[in-house]
Length: 156
Image 1 (cartoon, rainbow, N blue to C red):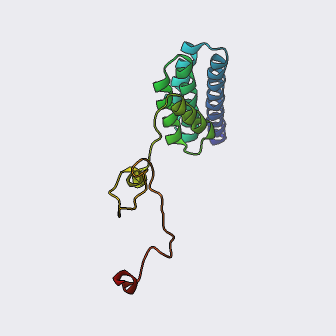
Image 2 (cartoon, rainbow, N blue to C red):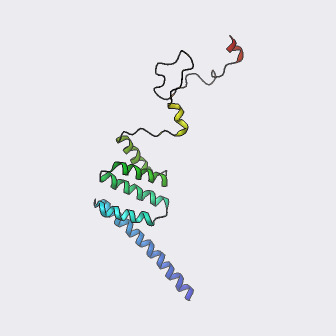
Image 3 (tube, rainbow, N blue to C red):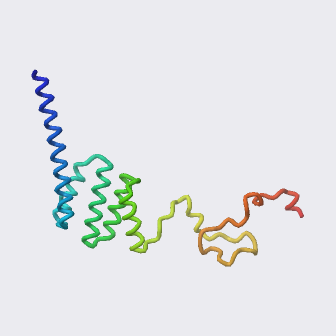
């Protein structure tokens, strides 16, 4: 009987924590909807400190980025949306917002390190180099079958 009461009490505690978390999210969303930026910022920050789930942290960073953008701090919004993508890379809203803001700020796109060599100018292999050499990504000119020539053809 006593152990059953403990489980009921613990269950009530867990349910109570779930309800308070839900109310905290609701309050933060209401502040954001009403454009009360200081109150919304405080509410979302408090949720960020208490949240352990990466999906929820991605959502919170997304909301904080929106608030930062509304307050005129575009670099902070870009950073927060990047953080949101780090927590959950497949988060579509953060990806669209991040790409839109990067385009609007006219920042060059990030090039993965594996593709950096494509953008470096390299010396032409022959005098028949195209006139646009070094102005963009290298284009493959020859087909895959003609890339490797036989020794007999090279001697001719």
